[in-house]
Length: 493
Picture 1 (tube, rainbow, N blue to C red):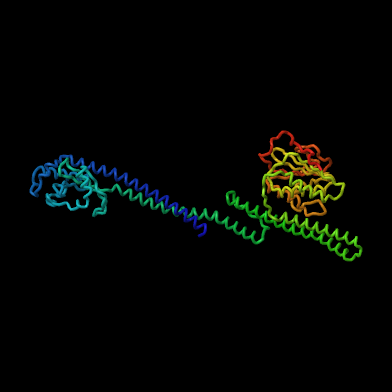
Picture 2 (picture 1 turned 180 degrees about the vertical axis):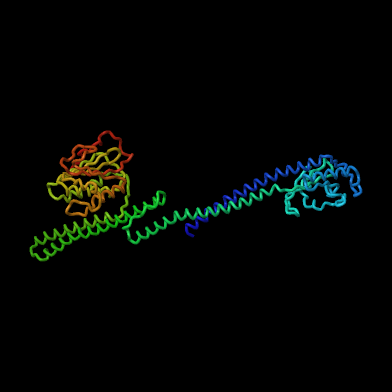
């Protein structure tokens, strides 16, 4: 079942339940209240008629048809006939349901004639004999109208009076019921129309968005997603447009990465082919060793490029734990020191004697520091690494005395494949940023001509760049006695 039909069924069903249920409840309450009021009025009519010159004890003495010729009986007969201006029929009868006197002529209904219709109202008669009064349920007469009998016991005698009264007061309730049915039908039709309009207003944008999703799935990403409205569907369309732009950006990034991979691998492969061919052709042992050494460096360069691409493309997972960051930092420093390009390049390390406790993945800390220090070594001849606690965070600073980052590159220095070097894929800083975000930290570039947010002693001069990474500290840090406000040279190299 599609969404449009569901809307129609739900709204129509709700409308019918609301109108019919509410109408039926209203009609039931109104009918009960009106009937109670009319029953009370009928009892009053019967009671008033019974107390106007009717003596039950005397009337019980009339037991034979011939007793109807007396003056008292005739006067009582005349009273009941005059009562017909207010009721249709009036009777006085005994416990055995035989008539004593009525508004009908004695010749037509003699004294002692059984009133057979009273047999249908046994419970009401029992109530009347016990309580003194009762009213029958409404019934339809031969003329199609509704009637009710009201019973009134004549004092404490065995004589009972019954009056027949039309129940036309229920006719307006029947009209009210018809009005409710018509209203429920109209509400259902209106609800169906409203449901169709609402469903169309929702389904059509969803159908358009579904077609857009299929179009994106088929690789047709050139057309932007049209914003539907300002409500939830509008937010959905805007989210799909952001998704489309993300897919396009990811696709462009993938294409660029593939092109960059081909470009970066081609250079080492070309060198490998050249040096390997030269090594095969030479008979000089020293020259062959020199060429094979160049082959080895090209292989190492190629392996580094592949590692960078894999690190960028592979989904990372951080296994954070509370530890001293000085340990992975020292491991990274030792790896860099082994491969320093020459004796003129210096690497200064300034870490405090106290532990730099933070929650992070140790391998990620080592990778980030290694990338930043290697970049700094390639940019300048003097590199300074420092670490300290600041505002509940562990700050690691890597600074060089190189040319710094060009102004036009500062906004995109952390984007993939952005680099000002002749070699390298430009993935190092992009990987650093991804790793820091994964460890709930951040990375910041401080250029040489930008104001320092927190100067610290021992900062290198010149216009070189400084990168700072911030890890979340721990509440379990030792008390601050002022000794770790700035880095010292305890771990200097």
